[in-house]
Length: 409
Length: 65
Image 1 (cartoon, rainbow over the protein chains, first blue to last red):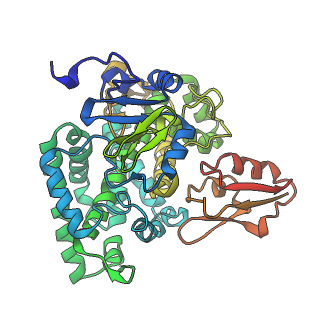
Image 2: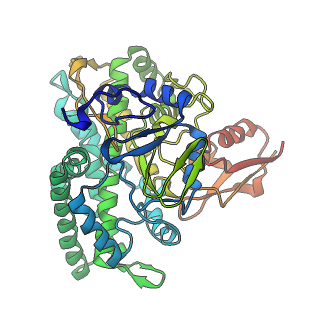
Image 3: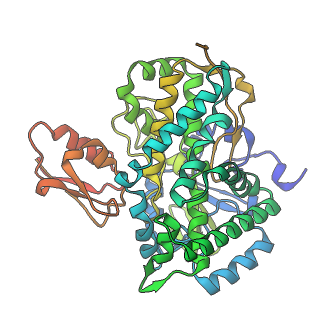
Protein backbone atom coordinates (compact mmCIF):
# COMPACT_ATOMS: atom_id res chain seq x y z
CA UNK A 1 0.00 0.00 0.00
CA UNK A 2 1.50 3.37 -0.95
CA UNK A 3 2.11 6.02 1.64
CA UNK A 4 -0.83 8.03 0.40
CA UNK A 5 -3.23 5.08 0.50
CA UNK A 6 -2.70 4.31 4.19
CA UNK A 7 -5.90 5.14 6.12
CA UNK A 8 -5.88 8.28 8.26
CA UNK A 9 -5.13 7.58 11.92
CA UNK A 10 -5.35 11.08 13.31
CA UNK A 11 -7.01 13.90 11.39
CA UNK A 12 -5.19 16.58 13.35
CA UNK A 13 -1.70 15.38 12.41
CA UNK A 14 -2.20 13.14 9.37
CA UNK A 15 -5.11 14.56 7.38
CA UNK A 16 -5.79 13.43 3.82
CA UNK A 17 -7.84 15.76 1.67
CA UNK A 18 -8.44 12.91 -0.79
CA UNK A 19 -9.83 10.42 1.72
CA UNK A 20 -13.12 9.35 0.04
CA UNK A 21 -15.23 9.44 3.20
CA UNK A 22 -13.88 12.89 4.04
CA UNK A 23 -14.59 14.14 0.53
CA UNK A 24 -18.11 12.77 0.74
CA UNK A 25 -18.82 14.37 4.11
CA UNK A 26 -16.08 16.68 5.43
CA UNK A 27 -18.14 18.45 8.13
CA UNK A 28 -17.41 16.09 11.05
CA UNK A 29 -13.65 16.13 10.34
CA UNK A 30 -13.63 19.92 10.27
CA UNK A 31 -15.48 20.00 13.60
CA UNK A 32 -12.88 17.66 15.08
CA UNK A 33 -10.01 19.78 13.76
CA UNK A 34 -11.56 23.03 14.93
CA UNK A 35 -12.00 21.77 18.45
CA UNK A 36 -8.65 19.91 18.71
CA UNK A 37 -6.00 21.84 16.75
CA UNK A 38 -7.47 24.08 15.05
CA UNK A 39 -4.69 24.24 12.49
CA UNK A 40 -4.18 20.66 11.36
CA UNK A 41 -1.05 19.17 9.85
CA UNK A 42 -0.12 16.33 7.51
CA UNK A 43 2.92 14.88 5.78
CA UNK A 44 0.77 13.53 2.93
CA UNK A 45 0.79 14.98 -0.57
CA UNK A 46 4.01 16.87 0.08
CA UNK A 47 3.04 18.05 3.56
CA UNK A 48 0.76 20.91 4.58
CA UNK A 49 -1.04 22.76 7.34
CA UNK A 50 -4.76 23.38 7.14
CA UNK A 51 -6.65 26.24 8.79
CA UNK A 52 -10.26 25.52 9.74
CA UNK A 53 -11.39 28.42 11.93
CA UNK A 54 -13.03 31.51 10.44
CA UNK A 55 -10.97 33.91 12.56
CA UNK A 56 -7.71 32.12 11.72
CA UNK A 57 -8.53 32.40 8.01
CA UNK A 58 -9.15 36.14 8.45
CA UNK A 59 -5.77 36.53 10.12
CA UNK A 60 -3.88 34.33 7.64
CA UNK A 61 -5.10 36.13 4.51
CA UNK A 62 -3.70 39.37 5.92
CA UNK A 63 -0.23 37.91 6.45
CA UNK A 64 1.40 39.25 3.38
CA UNK A 65 4.35 38.82 2.60
CA UNK A 66 4.81 36.11 5.25
CA UNK A 67 2.37 33.94 3.31
CA UNK A 68 2.86 34.11 -0.44
CA UNK A 69 0.35 33.34 -3.18
CA UNK A 70 2.99 32.30 -5.64
CA UNK A 71 1.86 28.71 -5.30
CA UNK A 72 -1.90 28.61 -4.56
CA UNK A 73 -2.37 24.99 -5.61
CA UNK A 74 -3.46 22.76 -2.77
CA UNK A 75 -1.63 19.74 -4.18
CA UNK A 76 2.00 20.41 -5.04
CA UNK A 77 3.22 20.62 -8.59
CA UNK A 78 5.21 17.54 -9.72
CA UNK A 79 9.03 17.95 -9.71
CA UNK A 80 9.45 18.03 -13.49
CA UNK A 81 6.95 20.87 -13.76
CA UNK A 82 8.44 22.75 -10.84
CA UNK A 83 11.69 23.51 -12.74
CA UNK A 84 9.71 24.72 -15.74
CA UNK A 85 7.52 26.97 -13.61
CA UNK A 86 10.46 28.46 -11.71
CA UNK A 87 12.19 29.35 -14.99
CA UNK A 88 9.01 30.90 -16.38
CA UNK A 89 8.42 32.97 -13.28
CA UNK A 90 12.03 34.24 -13.37
CA UNK A 91 11.56 35.39 -16.93
CA UNK A 92 7.99 36.65 -16.98
CA UNK A 93 7.00 37.32 -13.40
CA UNK A 94 4.03 35.74 -11.72
CA UNK A 95 2.61 32.78 -13.63
CA UNK A 96 -1.13 33.39 -13.47
CA UNK A 97 -1.65 36.88 -12.13
CA UNK A 98 -3.42 37.99 -10.08
CA UNK A 99 -3.98 34.67 -8.26
CA UNK A 100 -0.28 33.85 -8.12
CA UNK A 101 0.86 37.42 -7.49
CA UNK A 102 1.86 39.07 -4.22
CA UNK A 103 1.82 42.78 -3.56
CA UNK A 104 2.92 45.05 -5.13
CA UNK A 105 2.59 43.07 -8.39
CA UNK A 106 -0.88 41.86 -7.42
CA UNK A 107 -2.99 45.02 -7.40
CA UNK A 108 -2.63 46.27 -10.99
CA UNK A 109 -3.48 42.80 -12.34
CA UNK A 110 -6.50 42.43 -10.08
CA UNK A 111 -7.74 45.89 -11.09
CA UNK A 112 -7.23 44.98 -14.74
CA UNK A 113 -9.68 42.09 -14.61
CA UNK A 114 -12.21 43.37 -12.04
CA UNK A 115 -14.18 45.58 -14.48
CA UNK A 116 -15.12 42.47 -16.49
CA UNK A 117 -16.72 40.96 -13.39
CA UNK A 118 -18.69 43.77 -11.75
CA UNK A 119 -22.37 43.02 -11.02
CA UNK A 120 -23.48 45.13 -13.98
CA UNK A 121 -20.92 43.59 -16.33
CA UNK A 122 -22.03 40.04 -15.54
CA UNK A 123 -25.71 40.95 -15.94
CA UNK A 124 -24.83 41.30 -19.62
CA UNK A 125 -24.45 37.51 -19.76
CA UNK A 126 -27.67 36.62 -17.97
CA UNK A 127 -29.79 36.22 -21.10
CA UNK A 128 -27.17 34.00 -22.74
CA UNK A 129 -27.01 31.88 -19.59
CA UNK A 130 -30.82 31.60 -19.37
CA UNK A 131 -31.14 30.54 -23.00
CA UNK A 132 -28.41 27.97 -22.46
CA UNK A 133 -30.03 26.60 -19.29
CA UNK A 134 -33.39 26.20 -21.02
CA UNK A 135 -31.73 24.52 -23.96
CA UNK A 136 -30.03 21.99 -21.69
CA UNK A 137 -33.31 21.22 -19.93
CA UNK A 138 -35.09 20.83 -23.28
CA UNK A 139 -32.71 17.97 -24.04
CA UNK A 140 -33.64 15.94 -20.96
CA UNK A 141 -37.12 17.01 -19.94
CA UNK A 142 -38.99 14.34 -21.87
CA UNK A 143 -36.75 11.56 -20.58
CA UNK A 144 -37.94 11.66 -16.98
CA UNK A 145 -34.31 11.30 -15.94
CA UNK A 146 -30.91 12.81 -16.43
CA UNK A 147 -27.65 13.67 -14.74
CA UNK A 148 -27.91 17.04 -13.05
CA UNK A 149 -24.10 17.33 -13.12
CA UNK A 150 -23.12 15.95 -16.54
CA UNK A 151 -26.21 17.13 -18.45
CA UNK A 152 -26.61 20.46 -16.72
CA UNK A 153 -24.33 21.89 -14.02
CA UNK A 154 -21.13 21.03 -15.88
CA UNK A 155 -22.42 22.34 -19.19
CA UNK A 156 -23.09 25.92 -18.15
CA UNK A 157 -19.84 27.49 -16.87
CA UNK A 158 -17.63 26.43 -19.79
CA UNK A 159 -19.90 28.08 -22.33
CA UNK A 160 -20.41 31.23 -20.28
CA UNK A 161 -16.67 31.71 -19.79
CA UNK A 162 -16.06 30.92 -23.45
CA UNK A 163 -18.57 33.62 -24.31
CA UNK A 164 -16.75 36.11 -22.05
CA UNK A 165 -13.32 35.21 -23.39
CA UNK A 166 -14.57 35.48 -26.96
CA UNK A 167 -13.98 31.83 -27.78
CA UNK A 168 -15.95 29.81 -30.32
CA UNK A 169 -18.91 28.33 -28.36
CA UNK A 170 -18.60 25.14 -30.41
CA UNK A 171 -15.45 24.31 -28.46
CA UNK A 172 -17.23 24.23 -25.08
CA UNK A 173 -16.91 20.45 -24.75
CA UNK A 174 -13.17 20.73 -25.31
CA UNK A 175 -12.67 23.34 -22.57
CA UNK A 176 -14.56 21.10 -20.21
CA UNK A 177 -12.20 18.23 -21.01
CA UNK A 178 -9.09 20.41 -20.67
CA UNK A 179 -10.19 21.95 -17.37
CA UNK A 180 -11.07 18.61 -15.89
CA UNK A 181 -7.72 17.38 -17.08
CA UNK A 182 -5.86 20.12 -15.27
CA UNK A 183 -7.90 20.38 -12.11
CA UNK A 184 -9.68 17.12 -11.48
CA UNK A 185 -7.68 14.30 -13.06
CA UNK A 186 -4.53 16.38 -13.03
CA UNK A 187 -4.51 16.79 -9.26
CA UNK A 188 -3.22 13.30 -8.77
CA UNK A 189 -1.97 12.59 -12.28
CA UNK A 190 1.02 14.85 -13.02
CA UNK A 191 1.27 13.80 -16.65
CA UNK A 192 -2.36 14.70 -17.31
CA UNK A 193 -1.90 18.03 -15.55
CA UNK A 194 1.13 18.89 -17.66
CA UNK A 195 -0.50 17.71 -20.87
CA UNK A 196 -3.67 19.74 -20.44
CA UNK A 197 -1.87 22.79 -19.15
CA UNK A 198 0.18 22.77 -22.35
CA UNK A 199 -2.89 22.30 -24.54
CA UNK A 200 -4.60 25.25 -22.91
CA UNK A 201 -1.50 27.44 -23.13
CA UNK A 202 -1.05 26.61 -26.82
CA UNK A 203 -4.71 27.26 -27.51
CA UNK A 204 -4.50 30.72 -26.01
CA UNK A 205 -1.19 31.48 -27.71
CA UNK A 206 -2.86 30.88 -31.05
CA UNK A 207 -5.91 32.91 -30.12
CA UNK A 208 -3.73 35.83 -29.02
CA UNK A 209 -1.97 35.83 -32.39
CA UNK A 210 -5.37 35.93 -34.12
CA UNK A 211 -6.64 38.77 -31.96
CA UNK A 212 -3.48 40.82 -32.38
CA UNK A 213 -4.03 40.64 -36.11
CA UNK A 214 -7.78 41.28 -35.87
CA UNK A 215 -8.86 42.79 -32.55
CA UNK A 216 -12.48 42.55 -31.48
CA UNK A 217 -14.17 43.82 -28.34
CA UNK A 218 -13.67 40.60 -26.38
CA UNK A 219 -11.68 40.15 -23.21
CA UNK A 220 -8.56 38.85 -24.94
CA UNK A 221 -8.45 41.86 -27.24
CA UNK A 222 -8.77 44.14 -24.22
CA UNK A 223 -5.96 42.34 -22.41
CA UNK A 224 -3.79 42.81 -25.49
CA UNK A 225 -4.54 46.54 -25.49
CA UNK A 226 -4.10 46.93 -21.71
CA UNK A 227 -1.11 48.31 -19.86
CA UNK A 228 0.15 47.57 -16.39
CA UNK A 229 2.51 50.17 -14.93
CA UNK A 230 2.80 51.78 -18.36
CA UNK A 231 3.77 48.57 -20.14
CA UNK A 232 1.86 46.23 -22.40
CA UNK A 233 1.49 42.66 -21.22
CA UNK A 234 3.62 39.91 -22.70
CA UNK A 235 1.86 37.11 -24.60
CA UNK A 236 2.99 34.79 -21.84
CA UNK A 237 1.20 36.91 -19.22
CA UNK A 238 -1.94 37.32 -21.31
CA UNK A 239 -2.04 33.58 -21.82
CA UNK A 240 -1.51 33.07 -18.08
CA UNK A 241 -4.42 35.38 -17.24
CA UNK A 242 -6.67 33.61 -19.76
CA UNK A 243 -5.65 30.25 -18.33
CA UNK A 244 -6.60 31.49 -14.89
CA UNK A 245 -9.98 32.85 -15.99
CA UNK A 246 -10.76 29.66 -17.86
CA UNK A 247 -9.76 27.32 -15.09
CA UNK A 248 -11.04 29.46 -12.21
CA UNK A 249 -14.51 29.85 -13.65
CA UNK A 250 -15.41 26.34 -14.66
CA UNK A 251 -15.21 23.53 -12.16
CA UNK A 252 -15.66 25.86 -9.22
CA UNK A 253 -19.01 27.11 -10.50
CA UNK A 254 -20.19 23.75 -11.78
CA UNK A 255 -19.42 22.36 -8.33
CA UNK A 256 -21.61 24.98 -6.66
CA UNK A 257 -24.48 24.42 -9.06
CA UNK A 258 -24.07 20.65 -8.81
CA UNK A 259 -23.86 20.60 -5.00
CA UNK A 260 -27.01 22.70 -4.82
CA UNK A 261 -28.97 20.42 -7.16
CA UNK A 262 -27.68 17.39 -5.27
CA UNK A 263 -28.88 18.97 -2.03
CA UNK A 264 -32.36 19.69 -3.32
CA UNK A 265 -32.65 16.32 -5.06
CA UNK A 266 -31.98 14.64 -1.73
CA UNK A 267 -33.90 16.95 0.63
CA UNK A 268 -37.58 17.02 -0.29
CA UNK A 269 -38.64 19.53 2.35
CA UNK A 270 -36.07 22.11 1.20
CA UNK A 271 -36.84 21.41 -2.45
CA UNK A 272 -40.57 21.90 -2.03
CA UNK A 273 -40.10 25.00 0.06
CA UNK A 274 -37.87 26.67 -2.53
CA UNK A 275 -40.22 25.67 -5.36
CA UNK A 276 -43.14 27.24 -3.46
CA UNK A 277 -41.24 30.34 -2.29
CA UNK A 278 -39.00 31.63 -5.09
CA UNK A 279 -38.35 34.80 -3.07
CA UNK A 280 -35.98 32.59 -1.09
CA UNK A 281 -33.55 32.16 -3.99
CA UNK A 282 -31.14 34.94 -2.90
CA UNK A 283 -30.69 33.65 0.67
CA UNK A 284 -30.88 30.01 -0.48
CA UNK A 285 -28.03 30.57 -2.93
CA UNK A 286 -25.86 32.17 -0.24
CA UNK A 287 -26.64 29.21 2.03
CA UNK A 288 -25.65 26.76 -0.72
CA UNK A 289 -22.42 28.73 -1.13
CA UNK A 290 -21.77 28.59 2.59
CA UNK A 291 -22.61 24.97 3.16
CA UNK A 292 -21.17 23.49 -0.03
CA UNK A 293 -18.35 25.96 -0.65
CA UNK A 294 -16.21 24.16 -3.22
CA UNK A 295 -12.83 25.88 -3.09
CA UNK A 296 -9.74 25.80 -0.88
CA UNK A 297 -6.62 27.81 -1.60
CA UNK A 298 -3.03 27.46 -0.43
CA UNK A 299 -0.21 29.77 0.51
CA UNK A 300 3.53 29.23 0.69
CA UNK A 301 5.09 30.24 4.00
CA UNK A 302 8.10 32.50 3.43
CA UNK A 303 8.92 33.56 7.00
CA UNK A 304 8.47 31.94 10.42
CA UNK A 305 4.94 32.58 11.67
CA UNK A 306 3.39 31.62 14.99
CA UNK A 307 -0.30 30.76 14.97
CA UNK A 308 -1.38 29.70 18.45
CA UNK A 309 0.88 26.81 19.42
CA UNK A 310 1.87 26.12 15.81
CA UNK A 311 5.01 27.42 14.12
CA UNK A 312 4.85 27.73 10.35
CA UNK A 313 8.25 27.45 8.70
CA UNK A 314 9.50 28.86 5.40
CA UNK A 315 8.68 26.41 2.63
CA UNK A 316 5.58 25.06 4.39
CA UNK A 317 2.26 24.93 2.59
CA UNK A 318 -0.76 26.41 4.38
CA UNK A 319 -4.15 25.28 3.09
CA UNK A 320 -6.87 27.85 3.68
CA UNK A 321 -10.03 25.82 4.09
CA UNK A 322 -12.71 28.42 3.46
CA UNK A 323 -15.35 25.66 3.42
CA UNK A 324 -14.36 24.67 6.97
CA UNK A 325 -14.52 28.31 8.09
CA UNK A 326 -18.06 28.44 6.73
CA UNK A 327 -19.14 25.89 9.36
CA UNK A 328 -17.48 27.59 12.31
CA UNK A 329 -19.93 27.63 15.26
CA UNK A 330 -18.24 30.79 16.60
CA UNK A 331 -19.56 32.66 13.58
CA UNK A 332 -22.61 30.78 12.30
CA UNK A 333 -25.72 29.81 14.18
CA UNK A 334 -26.63 26.12 13.54
CA UNK A 335 -23.58 25.82 11.26
CA UNK A 336 -24.16 22.22 10.18
CA UNK A 337 -27.74 22.84 9.08
CA UNK A 338 -28.89 24.18 5.76
CA UNK A 339 -31.17 27.12 6.56
CA UNK A 340 -32.68 28.42 3.34
CA UNK A 341 -33.71 31.77 4.79
CA UNK A 342 -30.50 32.38 6.75
CA UNK A 343 -30.20 36.17 6.98
CA UNK A 344 -26.82 36.50 8.65
CA UNK A 345 -24.39 34.76 6.35
CA UNK A 346 -20.97 36.36 6.00
CA UNK A 347 -19.59 33.21 4.43
CA UNK A 348 -16.17 33.04 2.81
CA UNK A 349 -16.84 30.70 -0.11
CA UNK A 350 -15.20 33.27 -2.37
CA UNK A 351 -12.22 33.73 -0.09
CA UNK A 352 -11.13 36.81 1.83
CA UNK A 353 -8.84 39.75 1.48
CA UNK A 354 -6.99 40.86 -1.63
CA UNK A 355 -7.46 37.53 -3.41
CA UNK A 356 -11.26 37.56 -3.05
CA UNK A 357 -12.54 35.66 -6.08
CA UNK A 358 -12.76 38.14 -8.94
CA UNK A 359 -15.49 36.04 -10.54
CA UNK A 360 -17.83 35.95 -7.54
CA UNK A 361 -20.56 38.03 -9.22
CA UNK A 362 -20.40 35.85 -12.32
CA UNK A 363 -20.60 32.68 -10.22
CA UNK A 364 -23.64 33.99 -8.38
CA UNK A 365 -25.38 34.97 -11.62
CA UNK A 366 -24.77 31.51 -13.07
CA UNK A 367 -26.02 29.81 -9.91
CA UNK A 368 -29.08 32.04 -9.81
CA UNK A 369 -29.98 31.32 -13.44
CA UNK A 370 -29.13 27.61 -13.29
CA UNK A 371 -31.22 27.00 -10.18
CA UNK A 372 -34.17 29.22 -11.12
CA UNK A 373 -34.47 27.70 -14.58
CA UNK A 374 -34.15 24.15 -13.21
CA UNK A 375 -36.83 24.80 -10.57
CA UNK A 376 -39.09 26.51 -13.10
CA UNK A 377 -38.93 23.57 -15.51
CA UNK A 378 -38.41 20.63 -13.13
CA UNK A 379 -39.73 21.67 -9.70
CA UNK A 380 -40.08 18.10 -8.46
CA UNK A 381 -37.07 15.80 -8.81
CA UNK A 382 -35.12 13.33 -6.73
CA UNK A 383 -31.92 11.29 -6.69
CA UNK A 384 -32.52 8.12 -8.67
CA UNK A 385 -29.33 6.44 -7.44
CA UNK A 386 -27.86 8.13 -4.37
CA UNK A 387 -25.00 5.61 -4.22
CA UNK A 388 -23.85 6.58 -7.70
CA UNK A 389 -23.00 10.11 -6.64
CA UNK A 390 -19.22 10.50 -6.22
CA UNK A 391 -17.49 13.66 -5.12
CA UNK A 392 -14.34 15.13 -6.62
CA UNK A 393 -12.01 16.36 -3.89
CA UNK A 394 -8.84 18.37 -3.52
CA UNK A 395 -8.70 22.03 -4.50
CA UNK A 396 -12.29 21.99 -5.72
CA UNK A 397 -14.97 19.77 -4.21
CA UNK A 398 -18.17 18.92 -6.06
CA UNK A 399 -20.34 16.03 -7.26
CA UNK A 400 -19.15 14.40 -10.47
CA UNK A 401 -22.45 12.81 -11.33
CA UNK A 402 -25.99 13.34 -9.98
CA UNK A 403 -28.48 10.85 -11.47
CA UNK A 404 -31.98 12.23 -10.96
CA UNK A 405 -35.50 11.30 -12.02
CA UNK A 406 -38.57 13.48 -12.36
CA UNK A 407 -42.18 13.34 -13.58
CA UNK A 408 -42.66 13.75 -17.34
CA UNK A 409 -45.29 15.99 -18.96
CA UNK B 1 -28.72 56.12 11.35
CA UNK B 2 -25.42 56.62 9.57
CA UNK B 3 -23.11 54.01 8.16
CA UNK B 4 -19.76 54.04 6.45
CA UNK B 5 -17.69 51.66 4.38
CA UNK B 6 -14.10 51.23 5.52
CA UNK B 7 -12.85 51.52 1.98
CA UNK B 8 -9.41 50.03 2.47
CA UNK B 9 -11.09 46.85 3.78
CA UNK B 10 -13.67 46.51 0.99
CA UNK B 11 -12.78 43.70 -1.37
CA UNK B 12 -15.86 43.86 -3.58
CA UNK B 13 -17.80 40.84 -2.28
CA UNK B 14 -20.95 42.83 -3.13
CA UNK B 15 -23.07 41.45 -0.29
CA UNK B 16 -23.97 44.97 0.84
CA UNK B 17 -25.23 46.17 -2.53
CA UNK B 18 -27.15 42.94 -3.07
CA UNK B 19 -28.91 43.24 0.32
CA UNK B 20 -29.43 47.01 0.49
CA UNK B 21 -29.12 48.44 -3.02
CA UNK B 22 -30.20 51.95 -2.03
CA UNK B 23 -27.59 52.28 0.68
CA UNK B 24 -24.44 51.64 -1.34
CA UNK B 25 -22.74 52.78 -4.51
CA UNK B 26 -20.23 50.68 -6.44
CA UNK B 27 -17.24 52.03 -8.35
CA UNK B 28 -15.97 50.75 -11.71
CA UNK B 29 -14.16 47.79 -10.15
CA UNK B 30 -17.08 46.83 -7.88
CA UNK B 31 -15.91 48.31 -4.57
CA UNK B 32 -18.50 49.89 -2.31
CA UNK B 33 -19.03 53.20 -0.61
CA UNK B 34 -22.01 54.41 1.45
CA UNK B 35 -24.63 56.22 -0.65
CA UNK B 36 -26.12 59.52 0.39
CA UNK B 37 -23.18 60.29 2.65
CA UNK B 38 -24.02 57.23 4.76
CA UNK B 39 -27.41 58.54 5.86
CA UNK B 40 -29.86 55.63 6.11
CA UNK B 41 -33.46 56.60 5.18
CA UNK B 42 -36.06 55.80 7.85
CA UNK B 43 -37.35 52.26 7.47
CA UNK B 44 -34.08 50.91 6.04
CA UNK B 45 -32.24 50.47 9.35
CA UNK B 46 -32.74 46.69 9.36
CA UNK B 47 -31.36 46.43 5.82
CA UNK B 48 -28.35 48.48 6.91
CA UNK B 49 -27.79 46.12 9.85
CA UNK B 50 -28.05 43.09 7.58
CA UNK B 51 -25.50 44.64 5.22
CA UNK B 52 -23.10 45.13 8.14
CA UNK B 53 -23.56 41.55 9.33
CA UNK B 54 -23.12 40.00 5.90
CA UNK B 55 -19.83 41.65 4.97
CA UNK B 56 -17.08 39.00 5.23
CA UNK B 57 -14.45 41.75 5.50
CA UNK B 58 -16.25 43.50 8.36
CA UNK B 59 -15.88 46.62 6.23
CA UNK B 60 -19.15 48.38 7.11
CA UNK B 61 -19.66 50.31 10.34
CA UNK B 62 -22.66 51.95 11.93
CA UNK B 63 -21.30 55.31 13.03
CA UNK B 64 -24.62 56.62 14.36
CA UNK B 65 -27.60 54.53 15.43
